[in-house]
Structures are given as C-alpha cells and as structure tokens.
Length: 284
Ligand SMILES: NC(=O)C1=CN([C@@H]2O[C@H](COP(=O)(O)OP(=O)(O)OC[C@H]3O[C@@H](n4cnc5c(N)ncnc54)[C@H](OP(=O)(O)O)[C@@H]3O)[C@@H](O)[C@H]2O)C=CC1
Ligand SMILES: Cc1cn([C@H]2C[C@H](O)[C@@H](COP(=O)(O)OP(=O)(O)O[C@H]3O[C@@H](C)C(=O)[C@@H](O)[C@H]3O)O2)c(=O)[nH]c1=O
Ligand SMILES: [Mg+2]
Image (cartoon, rainbow, N blue to C red; front, side, top):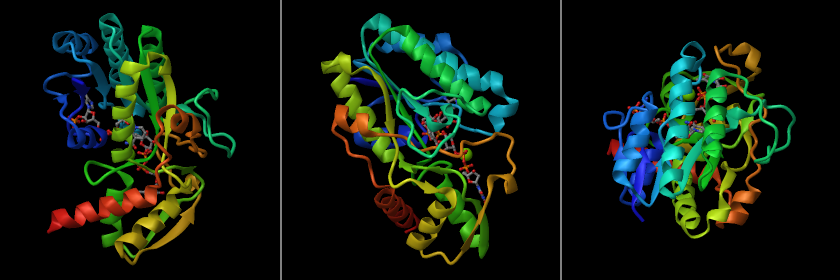
C-alpha cells in the first residue's frame, strides 16, 4: 500500500511514520494554504491512499486568523479529497470533537447534529463537508484531546507547569476522551487498508480514548503517573477565559468504529504511561 500523507512533524504524522513507510509532505512540499497545490501533489504521486494529518490546530489563534484556518482545515482537505475521488483512491481525513456544541452529557454519535462554538471547529466542519462533497471513498475520523511524546499537547504542558508550580487551577466542567496519537495512527492505517478492499465502509467515525474525564482529572492522572507533586484545583471554564469557547461535553461514541474496523476504544491511561516512558527514555 503506497501511502501519501500530508503532514510530517505533527503528533499523528509522526506516529504514522513510526509504523509504516509513507511519503510525508511537510509544509515545504505542500502548503495547505494553497489547496490547488495540495491537489496537484496527490495527482503527481498517484498513491494507493492519501492520509491528511496536517491541520491548523491553534484553537485560540484561529479566532483572529479564521481565513487561514478555513483554507488549511476547510478548502485544502476538499481539494485533496477531490483529487483522490478523481483517481479513485480512498482519502483518510482527521476531524475533531470541536465540531459539536458540547451540549448534554452523553457521547455524540457520528450522525449527531454539529454546532461548532469557535473558528477552529467551524473550519474543521467545513473540511468534513468538503470531503463528503467530493464524492469519493473516504473516512473522516473525529478524535479529541490528542496527546503524544512530541509536539504541543496537554500532557507536555502539564509536565512543564507541574515542574514549576506546586498548585494549578484546571477546568473541571469540560469532559472528553484524551486520545494517544499512536491509536489514531493505527486507526488511519486500518481504515486505509479496509477502504481499499471495502469502499462501502466510507463514512464518519469517532475515536477517543476512555474513560471520559475532565481536564482537571486528566491533569491529576498525569501528575500521579509522572510522580509530580502538584495540587490540581477544579475551576469552572468561566475562571479560565480564552478567546475560543470550548465544548463542555466532548464525549464521543466510538461504538461504530469498533464495529467497522475491529479496533477497541483505547484506554488513555495505558497510552499516557507509554508517552511518559518515551519521554523518560529520551531524557536519558
Ligand atoms: N491536537 C489535538 O488535540 C487534536 C487534533 N485533531 C485533529 O487531528 C489531526 C492531527 O492533529 P495533530 O497531529 O495534533 O496536529 P499538530 O498540531 O501536532 O500538527 C499539525 C501539522 O499540520 C501542519 N500544518 C499546519 N499548517 C500547515 C500548512 N499551512 N501547510 C502544511 N502543513 C501545515 C503542521 O506543520 P508545521 O510543523 O510545519 O507547523 C503540523 O505538521 C488534525 O486534523 C487535527 O485537527 C483532532 C482533535 C484533537
Ligand atoms: C494550561 C491550562 C489549561 N487549562 C484548560 C484550558 C482548556 O480548557 C483545557 C485544555 O487546554 P488546551 O489548550 O490543551 O486545549 P485545546 O487546545 O483546546 O485542545 C483542543 O485542541 C484541538 C486541536 C482539538 O481538536 C480538541 O480536541 C482539543 O484537544 O485546559 C486550564 O484550565 N488551566 C491551565 O493551566
Ligand atoms: Mg492547544
């Protein structure tokens, strides 16, 4: 299976490259602010499958830079998907829990109504629509709270802040599933393989780690596993003002993913322990 991937340095992009040979296009080879260039890259490589692991992920920055977010997260995936549809190859795309409005307290199923609260979520929702509109074989994998040993994520932030401070205030009224980038990479590869053989599996799927947890409780588990002595104090989102509003309920129903691809919902506490081990090994 010859895989072309957009993204090289991101969390999911790195985990994919650890698992299998891929042609990975970094920003220098394909800039997602130039959607036509991305489509041309697909046609030039003519692979068996394309995975898009690149995105504009700066949630707060997107509020004041929505034009760029819309190009990178909306138009570029649409152009990639159209090029894939023209070639008759599957397109694997990653989306987010932030397409939902965060209402209620039950997990969102893939067909639940969307309603993004901010510019990042709107741009990702536009990307989903463009991928579907291209009409080709595709998997849109919505995930949440991505963590890994590399790049920017909540685990890395907590390890840094926890070493500097003996007390942190963390929001406790946003609940979701932390998801190791490694598990997303596994699902992308399973989906790529299976969509080639069974294009009728095209559709939108959810993957998040379990159990669902608040950011505050996630921080507590990070400190417990890392052996860091830092008190976590629960606060409401109103006490942590940010440019972008985040959904209170980020729970994703992953049952259809398990049924279609045979991958069980990952336990993020196991993934977290692997991430901490990897970081420790790197520090020597
Ligand atoms: N991070 C998270 O918590 C979540 C992420 N997701 C989704 O998962 C997917 C993977 O996310 P993740 O691995 O965390 O992302 P990262 O933020 O770790 O990496 C993003 C990647 O996109 C690249 N990129 C950004 N802008 C451009 C551009 N204009 N042209 C080319 N490349 C660009 C970055 O390149 P460079 O290094 O050069 O900046 C980087 O390689 C994305 O679709 C994201 O929306 C979904 C839910 C949660
Ligand atoms: C650093 C810090 C954060 N927080 C809160 C802010 C926020 O609600 C929560 C997590 O902060 P982050 O900045 O990591 O969150 P954020 O960047 O919004 O993470 C999101 O990224 C995008 C790309 C996604 O698609 C989402 O699934 C989600 O992972 O923790 C505190 O309450 N106290 C703190 O000291
Ligand atoms: Mg962030």
